Image 1: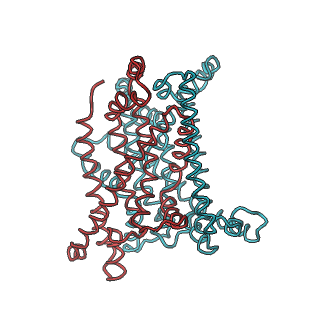
Image 2: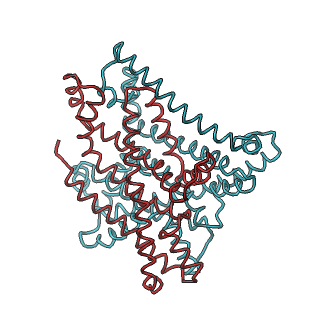
Image 3: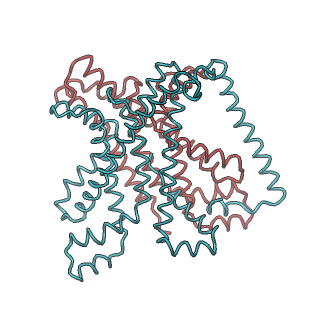
Length: 216
Length: 306
């Protein structure tokens, strides 16, 4: 494990960079995924169709293709940004399709009587959703969305592998190809870095699930 | 329209219908505007030029045949890797689930540890790890084998978790009845618990196939020698200088295969949940309601894992 211990500082900065990708991805896909879920259950047919199309498209495309398309497609429409931004945007676009489905399935667990009661006292669609259904769905949504987000942390490794620079993968490339360290110990260090992220996230999710669980 | 949607708003009256119509028009215009803007920008930069697309979509193009032959080769590599990974994951996954449930409280701790480790590792790291490890141990067998092993390591764990959930969801009486008629624990697991669990979890297992198929694409990022579908897209994009177009077309191929698998999952779910004949006779009396709940349930179980 010498190569890891000798370059602990490099690993630490790589870890933080990878964590940053995951954190931005988490924030973005939660927001955009929830918006998509609202589209998919809204009374507006065009928005519903758009949501269905988006989810079907993104959910069935490999993440690598989404990321490649972002990396070559966004510059092609004339927007210039760093690989970091393309990577995070691609990750958000991809993950939000899954977040959308998880939120939608959570909404389905709220008893229909709740929505019926809300409507019968005259609340509109947005009031029913925003005041009655979504707050209750939030609890049911914690486990599935949590699992999606843990998977997203793992997927953020793909963003790094495509060459964002500075993350755990680039640490691996730099130490093995440029500085000639043996691959196995360095990669073990990288793997431990990701395990720290995913196992912590799993533990946090389990804790949060217990809090959010409510007998219905 | 699916069940949860229907209760969120009333059957629209004339005013609501008008409002929904206006919202639809506005949303449609916004979406069309964004799409038009992207298309215009792409056209401005020559990304929609015929010569970039024709090798991929125009059979009369002289490169068309060679291009699609390469795509076919790549597709074969992807499908082969996915197939072997699926079969191995299923076998090992079922064995793991059975082992975890049969072992004692202490004996299963190391097993759970390995499962958690494999589950927490990003697949792309696993692929690279297997590659490095096999080269270090001097047992390297080529990139496809590396990919199959890495995918099997990850997915057998996932499938074992799915199956375990299925076994735990069975009524306790099943095991008790099995033991009461004199079957051993192993026999109960093999002949009573696993078959029923697989039946319950089949849709989830099929949707895991979609995940495996998508994950094969990760290999082309970290394994330089593999020539799977995505790597072919890379090579074509570099050779024909039409990366965006190549990724688009190859992406459509993945989507087509995955949609087929998704339909299969729904079909299986319908067959399984109704046990065939009984469902069909009932469905003939109330076809719409049956259909609706079925597709909806399948919708929720299919492809929920990114």
